[in-house]
Each structure stands twice: as structure tokens, then as C-alpha cells.
Amino acid sequence: MPSPARRPLRPRVKFSKEEDELLIELKEKRNLTWKQIADFFPGRNPGTLQDERLLDALKSYEDEKWRIVAQRVGNGVTPMGCCNRVWELFNDDLDDASQFSFSHES
Image 1 (cartoon, helix red, strand yellow):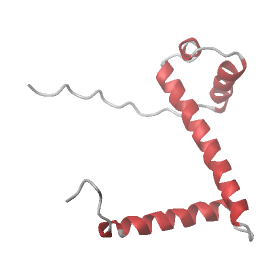
Image 2 (cartoon, helix red, strand yellow):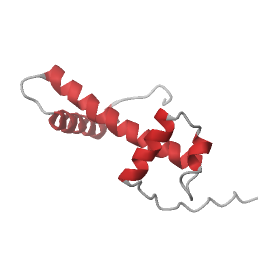
Image 3 (tube, one colour):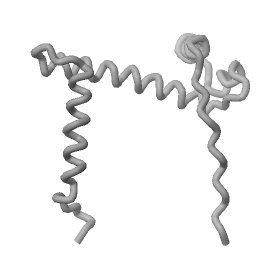
């Protein structure tokens, strides 16, 4: 029996600044549930609203994380400089990943 067809992905529609502000107001200040908040956003379901809030929180965390890292490194290193350097180091490690053996491989 074939697998069920995947639902087509809809393009992600970005929230406007006003929608972001309303979302924050409803969740953080009024403490509404995601289902209640969805009533304020026609065409969006509670899951997409949570995703938007998650992405916003992640971006805020990322910005703060790199600021803290740059402060700890010191010597005038910028947050973006730290982020870029870590990206370079990570990608170099990926290029050399063939040298590592993993426990599930024989």
C-alpha cells in the first residue's frame, strides 16, 4: 500500500510589525491560549502562531548569545565576527568529518 501523500507546503507568510506586536500583547500581557489568540489572526492556526513566536524568540536569543560571546572573547571582537568565525570553524569540521568514526559504525 502506498504511503499517504504529503500535504503541500504553503508559503510562509511573514507577520507584519503590527501582527508581531499584537501576538506579544495577547500572549505575554493577556495570557491567552494559542487557540484564543488564533481568533485574532484569520487564516492562521495555533501552531503557526506558536512557530512565529518561537522564531522570534530564537532570533532574540541568537542576537543576545553572540553579544555575550563577543564580550567574553574581548579585544573588540564583534558579535557578528564571533558568529562568522564559529560558522567557519564548524564548516571546517564538517569538511574533515570523514576522519571521525561513530559508535554505530563498524
